[in-house]
Image (tube, rainbow, N blue to C red; front, side):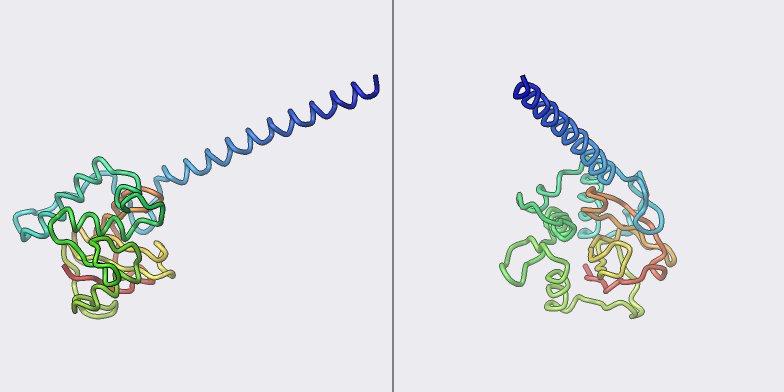
Length: 200
């Protein structure tokens, strides 16, 4: 009889541990999903609609980038779509993918591929072709330029694409921003950690 009680007690303890594990997994999953659907802005203001742009003022490359960016904002894919199936931080993959789809592909300095999966490598690419402009210069970004950030920025080490510049404000679209494709508008001078720009 004592053995039966001990066996029942162990079963109840095991069942309680399983229930606690399921509850903990549910809470963790909810927190993960909340992070993916976070509606806060990383910097400045997060836009929920694609911004109105004067497309008549854009050259063909800029117009192509805007068209692809608008399409991806309306119907974004998972990060693996932009990273050729790789599970990785995908902000630079998103930039690479948009530029390739728009007909202005990058060339990875290490592999020659259109995809440049790292922010540092993206900067190296722009430096190697003479189109990197460091932060602090008097350069005014244009639609289609790539914005590069270092760790101290609100975005962390990151990259996204400039959609619009108005006064001191920029509007950007980027991948892997709270795990999604997001648009932000902010005063560029207020953002610490901007490394520079890759000119289109």
